[in-house]
Image (cartoon, rainbow, N blue to C red):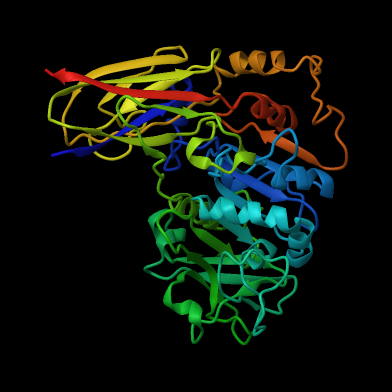
Length: 457
């Protein structure tokens, strides 16, 4: 009886594993970085995120008002058709998107339809979403009792939220005893966080509404005598296993660098990060057939699209009989290191596999006698602290039009706003977002897979 076997390849994580291992509860393999912070048109242009730094998360951000730069980042460009948030096959490059406060409707409209579709794809493909104030509004359907879907909103949280009507006030938050946030922090033992800045944010009623059936209440407002009192101040939503988790925050604890307000933001981030979607399977590898992963984003064929930086591609294949001698051959592009991992049960990752090949090189051959009940997964390449120099040289030599230190897509001189790679703790590649962006648009490699059997042993 034939049993399914998954097979997993991972590129460049041989070197990336060491710095990522020190990251508290925040490590999930298969992503380029942990978090992207959006501070674009009509949003607060924040350049630091205290909770991300205290959690030792790797993150990048856009902080600026240039609509053209914002469009290139989220909608893509001729040099990078998939945009900053997505891998070539449409999978999320970051574990979480964080959206700052500001003006939700105007920001959403500034993204244009293509940008909003990119953010929706990020969430539906497994990336988590967290937003404060305007970022919380943006994820929703509309505001108050309006029946239509608001133009500019993302509609990934499929319900309306309500406006608190509170401007420039300080509010308290009560953390319910069964709130998932208590898994990460104890909030001084009393589950109460005081003195949180609030400026015309949103809330959810806990008395009525269609949202009550499938929304988790993480914290409630303590505002006696005012509209949102005892209503939801922070809530979460996750509809499907393959989608990300939404964590919406109606107030502004995100800029605080210590104490319980920092802990509140940390707990929200951790819960969102723990809600990333389950990895999908690219397809089934058949013995004697060659599978080529060489399509581009524009081909709209994610099952055969090239792999991205630090991305995993997962596959299955069938082992006919227990103990079958199985050969798996992987051929990647020269100049990029790949690793190969196989696991009996579930997707294989570095540190979670039964067989592996992490030696340097772009060509791999694995020969093993595998049990019929084994499972495995494939994953592909990416940059790391040690491999960045190799990939950088590779990227620059692929375009003779790019002189040293510049990029045809993103010139060194920065216009209004900044797209930056944030060097936090274990991320020290030292690239700005612009040059890093050009780097990754040039190194999406093709991968060729072959599987064959040579009898029982």
